[in-house]
Amino acid sequence: MTSQVVLVTGAATGIGNLTARALAAAGHTVFASMRDPFGRNVARSRELLDLAVKENIDLRVVELDVQSQQSADDAVRSVLGETGRIDVVVHNAGHLMVGFAEAFTAEEVGHLMDVNVLGMQRVNRAVLPHLRSRGEGLLLYVGSTTSAVLPPFLAPYVASKAAFDALARTTGYEVGRFGVESTIVMPGPFMSGTEHFPNATRAGDGQVTAAYAALEPLVERNEEATAGLFRDGIDADPAAVADEIVRIVDLPRGNRPSRSVVDFTDAGVEQVNEAGETAQRNYLTRMGFGELLETASKQ
Image 1 (cartoon, helix red, strand yellow):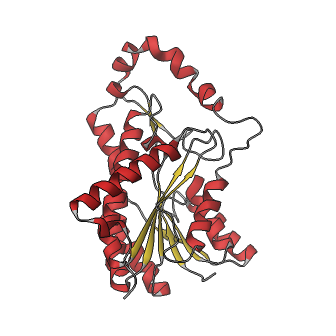
Image 2 (spheres, helix red, strand yellow):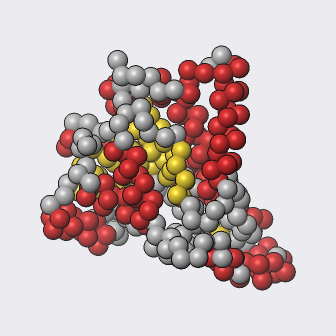
């Protein structure tokens, strides 16, 4: 295995945090990015830096707010200043909103899109000039099975992950011509081990929420219903997502999958992906753009 320089977004908590730790433990140089690492997130950044010393791993912290192009540019510039290169970007930063679709204002939905979709675009705009100039690299996107199967009461989040997925895929057509690989990892639901649900934003319009009172019994049993999807005896640990990301990063160039599903609920996402991939491959081939489905070799 060759050590690589990896930038992980949204690494303060959850899957991003687990991924940064796992990649560093696997021998990579990892920059765990987060907002305000020496202010509001100082305890979280200090924990990672202390772990680096304790375990003798190359785990560093860099400030990156995905809602700011300047912050993304500065973070990439900082990593390049320290290491001279970036090999992998793990797009993990994201937020969750829970509630009835109508009860979210357009501004609230727009804010979520800004974090979950435009945040990825800002980071790509910051890092792709470097990756294109080198003719290699990996954009690894932490998507969601919700872009294939649609759970209820998460409308803005589901919409944002679908947009995230589509932007990642279509960007991949283009950057692949410059030797940059793309992989979308699709985690299913996890009932513990992340701060996704505890930190979720609720719909802001209380009056509209009240108008949907008849549906509240469904909302109240949503968590129980989701838990019932897991196979007996399965411990759905989000560390499995981090392990899969490490596996993909460690694969040789040209052998990385376009998608990988980490789901313990048997939601049928693999079948959806297979059908979609077949249709997409046929569609682009008929257009005469079949080469966009392959990553060009490094010149």
